[in-house]
Structures are given as C-alpha cells and as structure tokens.
Image 1 (cartoon, protein in one colour):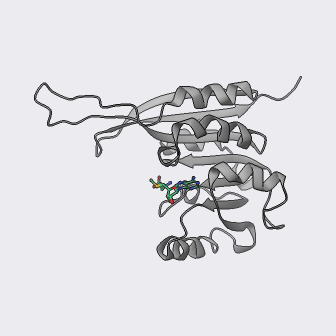
Image 2 (cartoon, protein in one colour; image 1 turned 90 degrees about the vertical axis):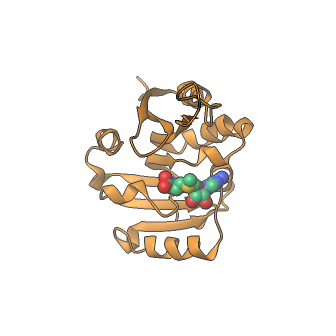
Length: 186
Ligand SMILES: C[S@@+](CC[C@H](N)C(=O)[O-])C[C@H]1O[C@@H](n2cnc3c(N)ncnc32)[C@H](O)[C@@H]1O
C-alpha cells in the first residue's frame, strides 16, 4: 500500500495533505509533507491525546488538527466555519478506512463535496471479508465499502481514478486502493 501511496505523492516536501480519520495510524507519517491537516471525528480523550501528539509532526507550524466529520468538512470550509489557520485546499487527501464508518448513502456525496478541495485522493478500505473457517472453504461476505460509487463520484468531478485490489497476509479482509488525480483543464 505504501508503494502506491508514494507513487501518488512524488515530491511530498512540496505538497499539502489532508488526512481524514487518521486514528492512531496516520498514513501521512510515512512521508514528509510540507503541511498536514488532520481531520478526526472522534472526540474521545485517547483520540484527542493522539491528535495533540500529531500537532508536533512533522513541523508544528505546518500541522493542523481539526475535530470534525468528513461529511462536514467541505460544508464547514465553504461556510467559513473552519479555524482561519486551516487550509481550505490541499494537494492530496488521504482517507484510510474511514468510509466504513459512514452510511453508504452519504459516501459519494461527501466525496463529491471534498473533490473541490483536493487535487489528488488516496482512499483505502475493505471491500470484502473472507472467513477462512467456513466449511466450504473461504467465503466472501457482503461488500463493506463499495468503491464503484466513490470512483464514479470522483470521475464526475473531473478526476482520473483507478482502483487496485489487494489482499494482505495478516487479515481476512480484502482491500481496495483508489488513487485519483484531477485532470487539469485544457
Ligand atoms: C478504522 S479507524 C482507521 C484509522 C487509520 N486511518 C488506520 O487506517 O489505521 C477509523 C478512523 O476514522 C475516524 N472516523 C470515523 N468516522 C469519521 C468521519 N465521519 N469523519 C472523520 N473521521 C471519522 C475514527 O474516529 C477513526 O479514527
């Protein structure tokens, strides 16, 4: 996954990133972005403690931490409800295992709203789970996050979007990686 991510963010030192739902495991920590904004919905003390630590990474003056939901970021930003120091536009937006927590009917609309605020997207989530113990062999359970409406939402907004499917050895879950780049106007 990291290899695909790095391919999307060549020269990260020149890029601003928005990572949504970083939890305890920010993908942005793997490269040195010029600036990073973390948007996290969880208000629990543990999450807040983690977010406070994130404020020091990678360069305190370039790192912002905002409490809020993915679905509300675009609206709050447009309405001027975000803190003034938080950027409104980003080079890349990272959404790693967050759509799982958002009702399916809200996902594509939220991503369309966000599309105006970022030139690239890197979205990772589970699209199926295998239960290895099933009698008839591995079984695919229902789709957890359907990447097709997400891909279509970005394409409607003028992005070139491609999906790679991935199995990871340590988990029965099957993952997709959706990388998207805004096509510049001619
Ligand atoms: C499964 S964890 C993933 C954490 C990390 N990105 C990773 O892959 O290890 C989901 C994270 O998304 C956050 N989250 C859930 N719903 C969200 C929403 N609507 N907007 C922003 N963050 C959300 C949770 O608080 C949590 O930190």
